[in-house]
Length: 354
Image 1 (cartoon, helix red, strand yellow):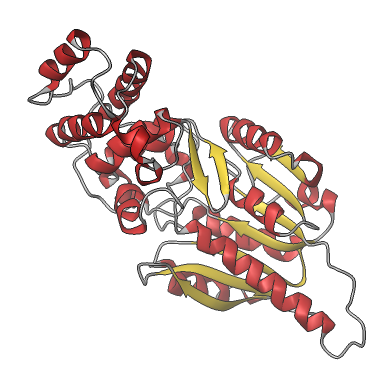
Image 2: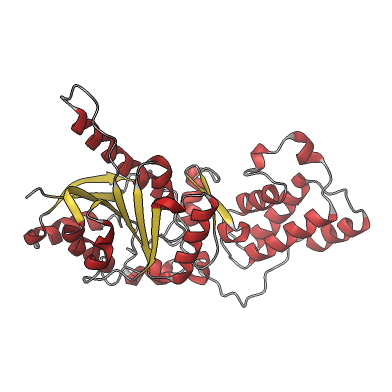
């Protein structure tokens, strides 16, 4: 994620409880200078700068207990001024008085943030790796750690390509990997892989129509529709026949619902009130969808094909035990990778060659 600083964004979007959820029916508390700023804006139009407005809304957000008050204010103001970050605004834009239209736009967006709407939904877009993607509720917001999941797939594809070329006098033909993403959400994973692997083909599936529609919108914005197939489909143990229409897969990639059901109630208000909870709730052990993916994988993957999953830090041992209890699947846990907080977050599972 290129927008918020990594530590701040981890806290802002992290799945661990950080604050007590509040209902949307509660009226926001106005900041101590809210009425006076409004009066000054109307009495002396054009004399309020970006710096003034950021400081003002930061205080309003802090008074109302909004997480990352400063960052929320900066991103909204910079968005209205046509910039990605507040730090990227030049001195002229920082000190030029805002127009009445700009002030009104900022106020409308800030009121949405006061209702605990995530900044990504407030702005209607967000950066993931090198892409700017449309965002809207209730489609799951891609988290910054998921960028590392993309990197792991790219590293494995590069390793396989080098392995094929080792010992050859001439380079082998560039492979055309077929990738299945289960639970595409906004399309962040699928589109990142398409951009980084220009010869690849992706099949992206999601059980929610809103996610499928948003992925299609982001696909068309990036002009990648020729290499992706998007399905409105709830993956189950009987999905193999439908998904194999595009042939066996080189990779299955997923950031599936993996939150333990008992932990759902303690998620932040931003998540509980706006995001699709079905994209988060992984059942009693957090492995409901994970088990389905692993059970399907042998039928879908080529020999030595790989599954890459983002999981809860408690899952690596659980998944390894589950695979050992199902040796007929011929799946091996090859590696466990840590996220930027040092927690075991990503699994590389490989299908054994027959």
